[in-house]
Amino acid sequence: MAKDYSEITPEILDLVKKLPEPIDPELFTKYRVNRGLRDSEGKGILTGLTKISEIMSYVQEGDQRIACPGRLFYRGIDVYDLINNIVEDGRFGFEEITYLLIFGKLPNLEELKEFKKLLAEYRTLPTNFVRDIVLKAPSKDIINTLSRSVLTLFAYDDNASDISIENVLRQSIELIALFPVLCVYAYKAYRHYEFGDSLVIHPPQENLSQAENLLYMLRSDNQFTDMEAKVLDVALILHMEHGGGNNSTFTTHVVTSSGTDTYSSVAASLASLKGPKHGGANIKVVEMFEDIKRNVKDWNNDEEISNYLEKIMNGEVFDKRGLIYGMGHAIYSISDPRAEILKRYVKGLAQEKGREKEFNLYEKVEKLAPQVITKNKKVHKQISANIDFYSGFVYHMLDLPIELYTPIFAIARIVGWSAHRLEELLSNSRIIRPAYMNVQKRESYTPLLERE
Image (tube, rainbow, N blue to C red; front, side):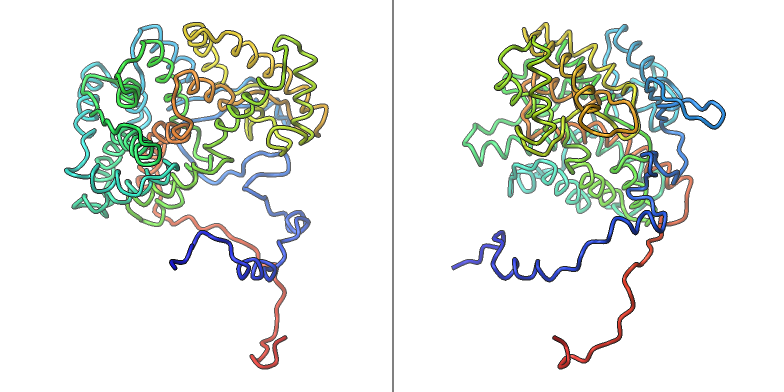
């Protein structure tokens, strides 16, 4: 009988008991070690320099840091201005902002036209790649399938290990173009082999934007509204980049500094993004709201909503972890600019979909949750909704499968990773190697036969 390697056997359970005790949390304070590279007030420890993006959550007045409404800048330009102008012009902006983040300036008409053409050319997978790689060993975890595909592309690249700027730029553009294709095809394969869905794969279209192609390839009838594609385009732009200090982008810098190849670097960043503390948070928001909708009878009753949020905070209901998902951020306090921007377009999409009542519920929870959190938990700063609060609702209204929520984050964030990888290669020749203090006491050697 074949061994089930996924089983946790009694032998493994016995070995777990022999693992050493965790490090005493008080030692971090004693030796002034900043856990998670954050100080006691939650501020990030400065570990690098970048020109790619800037997060603003406070203003400095003398020795005082005063919290302010959050702002996000891409290459020095306020994201509000970027998205407002793109939306007012009625165009899609993913490709334009990709150019900005990688090359450091906004493209002119001719540069944008040529860049879109280049991305379209790179949206083609190698011959038989779908059959031999994507359709083999399908998984519900699309990020894992995406990682496998990215690593396998190494074998199809004659210059895979070349980390010259020219070659890394070529590889980066290739991966930015291919991520939607790889994600959608991986999901289609999973649905076919696990649930018997018809396996229909639509090739991407040259004349469509990144957001349009994503919806075109995913939907069996290839149909989508302009509103749907435009809101998804805004969501992708807002997820593209968020400073060098977020976990997956920092991973990009760390791994790139070792001199490794692009495919390995991107796979490492994908592994980071997959974590529920990072890229998987919007899934929990949607699940939480489904629970709220089932258990709160009157969606207009503030008291009933607050009482149920209290139960969530106390770990009595939902997943019993005591967390109101989508609220609060490591950096922002008064507001997350990405959530503020996305909310404006979510409202229009909700009206088109006839889901205004749900949108109103989201607004009420956004207003009431900070009060509940502040009442039940000691917090050192103001609490507001983060981008995950509304992005999950957007994907839900677009009828996107939950298995693709985190991959869509990756489809956007590969742009930021690529920009940071190029910046690391251009600006820093040292391997990133922080220090860890050993707190294990010294022991003398005990001969084998004398050990207990």
